[in-house]
Length: 289
Ligand code: FAD
Image (cartoon, rainbow, N blue to C red; front, side, top):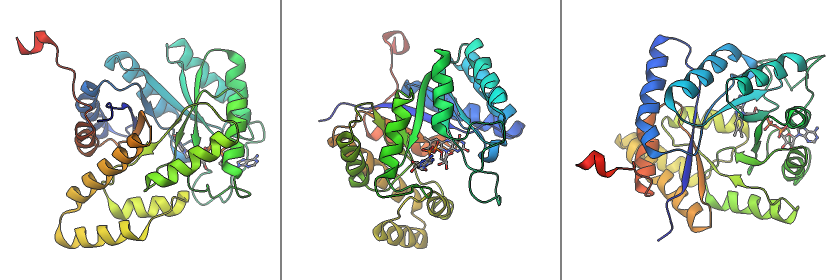
């Protein structure tokens, strides 16, 4: 049997009091699984800058977990972006997920702020120059919508590692084979840094479908068919747990030892899948005495 993987969890910053309680509840459910780290997203179009900063600092202080802050190049000058990063480092948060980011909704293709970073590579270089951060980046097993040529995502990922990144987390995908093909291509291109699969437990099929279409993740016909039937029978939860557990098991059988879960601040499905994979709360002798 394969050993249990190391897991990490992604959250998004809460926008109101109720959402704050939901996030805290998610953290309480998932932290007994001893995540390697947890990360907090930065709203698309740079929309949640302050919320992300507050959530990162609060989680770092109150949860005792290793927290990574997402940071994008969108809608900010270089100085503003580096100031946020340095604030994190001053507060003891040295893990950053460095991204180019997507433009604000409806504004077309990514366009750099006139005084901002023009690409993820520029942001990574600037963060690496400070010597203060452990830098993770995004990777794309299915072609990113901005990929310019066959293999463009692999080549660009290599540039991100050369610029100072230490680990990549992938966009979600539906079949382990997609990840293995990408991992092989990365190896061929001379990338030897870790590439961690990003796993999206499917809480809401309609939402995931929309998201997949926007970010270029290929939806296999069998997944679509399976969800159509499960929705008709009211058994989506069972299917979602089964599909996600099987994907993770296939990845582990293929040598993957770290998994990053996109939790969407909902703990149950992620927790059930982790349990099925052998990632269980650590119980000390004192707890059972
Ligand atoms: P990059 O890798 O820089 O670019 C994407 C692709 O475009 C490249 O792989 C390459 O094929 C092509 N490309 C880009 N620039 C060039 C160039 N100069 N030359 C040649 N090819 C180029 N978005 C948010 O807004 N907030 C978040 O918190 C967030 N978190 C994320 C976490 C993860 C793990 C992932 C995978 C994505 C996340 N995203 C987030 C989404 C991300 O911002 C979008 O996918 C965005 O479009 C690309 O950002 P990137 O840094 O990964 O892009």
